[in-house]
Length: 249
Image 1 (spheres, rainbow, N blue to C red):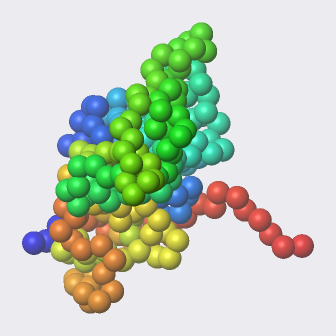
Image 2 (cartoon, rainbow, N blue to C red):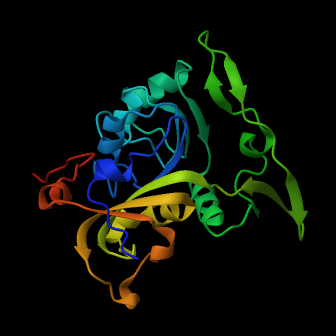
């Protein structure tokens, strides 16, 4: 089955208002920027995004956030995105912050058809007991707080129940891909990309290099998890931002 789509615009044209999206990347590494820009142009609003972080000011998911397209973020890191922090504290966006490892496993579980799992991460904290501010009110109070989660003991150790995550769409970036949707990621740019791809009901992958067929031994993510493949131009593939540029003296 040839899954190649002619353009990023065509690949995200059916993303509706209010859709949920799992998006790969960590900081500016492995971010599906071409698909994000196409989504910005397409114009859906009220998006619910699941990603490690929400990009940076002017980059990655930060462009959708600044345009007011994102209503809710499930992630593990607000980081140095000043727009994200301001919108969260002003009550303009709802944010569910969860431990980073838990986020990874929730995406993987959702992709594997596992509805929930127990983990010790967060036991004895507001993660399990509830009360984390998901959305602030304009006056600075908490408008929506996280609910308490089930805690259960196994062999004398307490664990908190976490739900698997399944989203309407997923946007990811790969170093190489074939026409069947099999993907290979480049070193640290792999990060959350395979997990996000697994969680999406419709997964769209932008690939820096398209080949007819990958060697099965080099595949990081099998094509069963990918529905659409968008080949990038050399210019698009080479455009990679650096979050913190440092140089030696």
